[in-house]
Amino acid sequence: MLHELGYTNLRVYQGGIADWLESGSPTESVTDTSPPEPEPNPDPRATVPIGPPLGAAPDGVVGRGPARLSRMGRLDKSVLDLVQQRSTLQLFMIWIGTILLSGTCFWLGALIGEHGLVEGGNPVGADFKGFVSALYFSFVTATSIGYGDIVPIGAGRVIAVIEAITALLIFGAVVAKFVSHRQEELVSEIHRVTFEERLDRVQTNLHMVLSELLSITAMCETHAPLNRITTRLESAIILFLGESRTTRDLLYQPRLMVEEGVLAAILATLASTMNVLAELLEQMPPEFSRTQTLTITLGRLTGLAQEICGECVPHTYTPRLIFWMDRIQATALRIK
Amino acid sequence: MSSQLTAAHSPDLPEISREELLRRLKDSSLTILDVLPQASYVEAHIPRAINIPLEQIQTRARELLPDFAAEIAVYCGQFT
Image 1 (cartoon, rainbow over the protein chains, first blue to last red):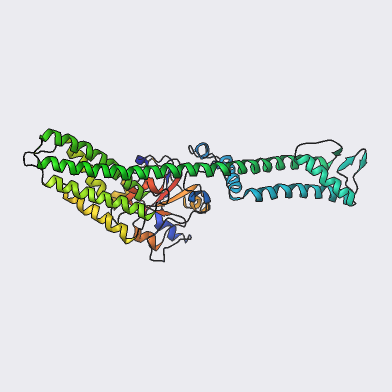
Image 2 (image 1 turned 60 degrees about the vertical axis):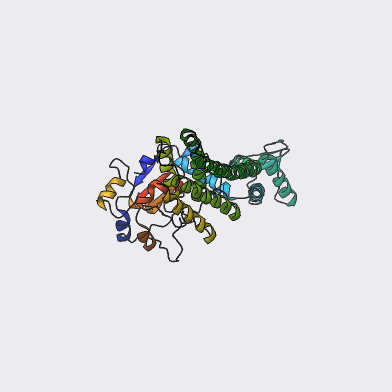
């Protein structure tokens, strides 16, 4: 059933909850009275409203198929998740920390008599001047400058190589984080603007359908030719169906928070349009018969309207909105 | 009920063992899906599992599981 919907990477736990309980594995239960919501996902990206952030793991690549989800893929993902959860400043502090730690390592080496650094042929000492020199060398190495005035020898070389690789990677993460943060802001701003435009269009279109339906009602009263009425009714209802679908999607998948007032206005217009449509269909002249397009579109419309109700919508809305939803549902039943 | 369960599973779907599930409870790349009725979910479910009762899968799956490629572990009562 699920894989028919397009899910490609399904696995079945054959034992089910019975086996799970029998084995004494940990379970959770819902104790409060609110409807069970999906468990809070520990992955902060799940709460980001619009897709994965730009700096996130290339999910499309990692998760394309079971074969691609190798151990390396998971490692990549966990490292990237780790970077994702840190702020730019935190990452930068980690970078500085790495440099300071390596510098201290060189100095400690000198302290125990195992000189890792040489400056102009002389080993760097374990005194304060030596400590400053070690830090200086550490910075020069981490930033991949490598002047060469101080050079590592012996075990110092190992530390220097490890430091260079780590510091470079961390610095890369700092830069990427810094850049992607701004881009994320821009993308969400663009989404917000287009979303608001879409909402405006829904309202305008619904008003258009409403006035069109009213003028069709007037046409019926003046006994205009039936075929003209039918054509106009068809196009109006198709537009109405489209906007109803958008409203339904809005209620089922609120990608962005819609102000309650805006949502109430849309639902109210939808309800009154539905009402006018029901009245219009009831007072149609007896010789009027529904065309195939009309029947199909109206069927879809009623089906859609049945999904708009206070109880079936997955999110809880205020009574004010539920009133409109229930009204839409009730009116739609009259269109049959 | 059992005919419904058979409809939910296709025999060729790969399995996941209890051990692997236990091991990966904290692994966010694995989604755990409970297709039992809500009452059963309220009583007890595998930690982190999300609940979509079988009859609602058609309508709600896309909303709650937007990623088609995500690895999803499905379970119900007991598969017989």
